Image (cartoon, rainbow, N blue to C red; front, side, top):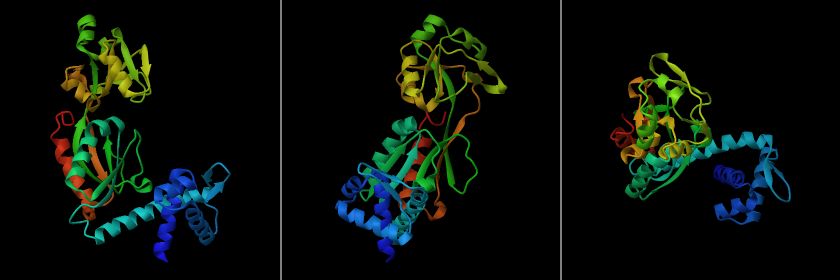
Length: 299
């Protein structure tokens, strides 16, 4: 009976994720009528409708949205318990669910994940790269990479590095316009503003120094700001890890280093603590060692 209920929750989650019965059936390897029947039985048992149904789409009801969070948490806990009983604390097995900021994930986490997969054939990975603070437990993640001060929580954290907030441009720009010697000099330079980093034009430096810049070029993504800076048009401000490869290849160089504010910490966080499953424990160990050895992440 309990296993039937867990299976019904998995079907319910699959429908919500796929946005329909047909997509859920394909993802689960079931027939559409089977998916419809399982959901109907679950709704009958709960005494509520979980989805609004039309001929074209389905959408969660208010009780459905509430139940979805609980269902994800229950299924995640069950899978972790199942993995543990099957000896996961000895050899990593199962799906590792991880989240990280977009550029950090692309530059630094993807190589770790492919190395992890090569080491442990019994593991699969689902990585989600987003520039927001995720709720690890409610969204079903095993591990998150966090940059910046941590909020108080019950999560376990391992500090693995730090990043700086840097001002950068390419050599051709500095040759044409000169190198700023102090934050105040930025008012005389072409500024590229990346709005996803800062919502204001106030650039803060050490000793509570603030400079109000006047960007002539505004973009809503960090890669776009970096691309504009590499073209030689102006200066931009980003986090040091976001231009690690560009610094290594000589495409960009930083200035005003002596005026930078305090570095931001990098943490690996997870909810399991000392009882962490092997897949979590071994990935944390791998990521900790690799990130701490990376000069772009420990300036």
